[in-house]
Length: 311
Image (cartoon, rainbow, N blue to C red; front, side, top):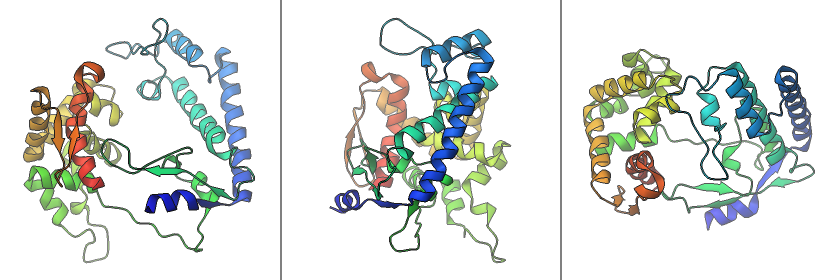
């Protein structure tokens, strides 16, 4: 009922701010498209042309195994976001920027022209029960200017966020002593500054000797399956050997969490078709024949943690 009310109410749009943002995005989309046309005479909106040009540039040479698209007629190189993000070629970054701004412009900003409010449909039909949104996904609006076009009905915004909720669930379910110790510390020191010892992402960055931004991605990769490939993709690391090394160091630092992750994956590979959340809800795992081993291993961890956090 709460989500139905949220869906029906919508959120107020500042049309002046929306119009300004539309002009900015149109300029950026035009700039990136013209840049691609000048460099190699291709359309960045065509996935087929994108994969052809990047192959011509040798951008796929860094992949251990060439990424191909699934299904459809024939087989061609993938130009998905994950694939482009793993490339070193600057042209891949240009294409990613074009896609991001073009999608924001066409999916949200233009359709909201003249609208008093933005509406979506909130629901709980994800496998884990986590709230999601479709028919203009309001949970997918990028930070910064795009969110600035919304106006609170009560004049003042109120922002509420859980602190590392899924990592806290992992610490609880696994009984990991080191993680629980970090989460037990006060977030603010006596002098009023942020307590870095209570910041699990900073602590992970310290012992892995990597920037905090990457360590945050590594921590979240553990929640999403902890395979070397998952860590490589999530942390934007281009070397799968390095990703495996980071995972092992992480497992050594948080041994109970590491054991829990490996136990969940072993059970899934041994034929266990369901996982149980913290509150006793059972969730069916995907079929390995249909979805593949990597997806099964990811869900064997993520379903327990994300679903418990959602509950």
